[in-house]
Amino acid sequence: MSGEGGQPRFDRAAVLGIGLIGASFALAVRRAGLVGETVGVARRESTRQAAERVGAADRTTPDPREAARDADLVYLAAPVGALGPMLESIANVLPEGCLVTDAGSVKGPVCAAAERVLPPSVAFVGGHPMAGSERSGPEVADAGLFAGHTYFLVPTARGGDEAVGRLERVVEAIGARPAILAADEHDRILAATSHLPHALASSLALAVARLVPDPEARARFSAGGLRDTTRIAASPPELWRDIFLANAEALAGACRLTMELLEDLVRAAEGGDAEALMEMLSRAQAARLDLSSDAAEGPGR
Amino acid sequence: MSGEGGQPRFDRAAVLGIGLIGASFALAVRRAGLVGETVGVARRESTRQAAERVGAADRTTPDPREAARDADLVYLAAPVGALGPMLESIANVLPEGCLVTDAGSVKGPVCAAAERVLPPSVAFVGGHPMAGSERSGPEVADAGLFAGHTYFLVPTARGGDEAVGRLERVVEAIGARPAILAADEHDRILAATSHLPHALASSLALAVARLVPDPEARARFSAGGLRDTTRIAASPPELWRDIFLANAEALAGACRLTMELLEDLVRAAEGGDAEALMEMLSRAQAARLDLSSDAAEGPGR
Figure 1: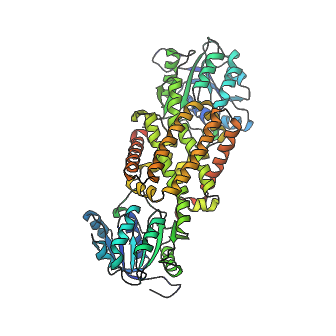
Figure 2: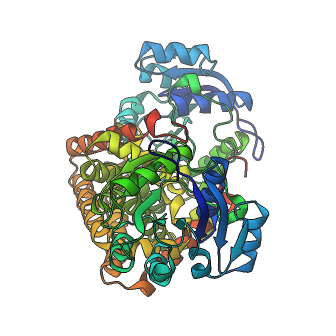
Figure 3: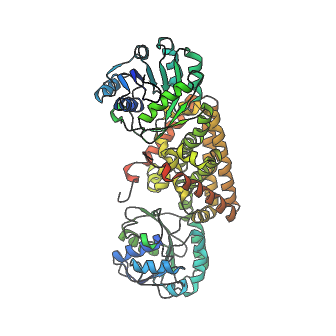
């Protein structure tokens, strides 16, 4: 590692789960000159081969323990539900001074697992890059995937200021914008800005399928509004099952508030209350327009 | 009018409400050679001037009665809530044999109003082109706006097979795909495929604003998912207020079904029921993927 303020350097990074996110991180830190060697881990041979082919990993293995054993940076990029078991399986092989982080969309459970299972000799800082793609796998990895996007960092009892500072410099070096938040605050905010929209999009897709059972009629008699509003429901269900389970309480609160607001809207329509409807729809419009400010759109800004 | 099977021709079209939709219809029928003269109606002088400037109207007037008086085709392109009063105001000046239609997103109330207020000497067929733009006004009108899009036609007691057939040929001549449905069926389907997504997008925008009150944090800590899911909430509230009021019953049913499905999802998450969550999210994914078939995407298909 270089001195304070300089860019951290790692001799060997282990990327556990070298799919789109893991491989993009590997490419990004390599391009930034932060790592010597990168070892990629994936169960499937085709994924490992692809990771080597695109240059995300110098070598690969199906065994997380083998990869973690001599790494000074360990990056966990697996589905949220797999992170706890993964930490447990590598806990007793991690070298002293090793920095461990993850890329999961929910931070409470993985940070709690890290505090419970990791030895005091290693550092753990939770991570969550707000980047992704509708495609997956190392084949579509991109060293610029994180550029301009928010990258959450979550301090833990195993990783305080020093470790957070190191990871913050890594995040900045790959062009992302670090945001340091407590795990519960992160999960509460993401329940609203990410998990709630997903739950609504999925419920909407199910409702429309029930209300207009003929798929051809559904497609023919719908426009961009329905397609935009349900787009994220096409994401892999196993990822979102894990996220919903890991953040159930905050998600439930956000969903129930939304149902109350929707019920208000419906009652105003049923009651013919034009004024109340106008007021709610105007506030919703203003809230949406806030979101699409330049600051929020696209990478690099 | 030409003979059966040929393209209908009109001496004078009156377009009442010559904004984006009205002006695009005027340009489209002109390009198709279906009309002699077009008279555009708008309250605001700037709108009337723009309609003339883009060639959507040969002349314009602020007075719907003046325009309707000598028209053989009357096209009502006003917000849903204004259609009934507009029909009432022109009812007693419409020439015998005149064909009247509208472009509103809800068909029950306008068709009922037509049956109530129009004389038997004129024909009324409800219309609803599934086309639009985030922009508005005659300046952005486009003769190709309807091409490839579904265009609903709704028979009424004032407009049966003959009138529907004439309008169907107009719709085909401007490149749209006619779909003939009863008013209540149209409104039930659109409640699901259009009005429900809007109600959800608006409720979501309101909920997220409540849950993450700081607009900067909201923008910074959200990604494409939230922006996609709330995009339509940025539409003009007065248009949607009218639509929600006009289709309150069907909308309420669709919203309450969605709330039940969302509640199922939330309960499965809270109860740690991974299997139930996986099942629901998989069905939602399949329903969404149905929607994005080639048949549904974009104009011209």
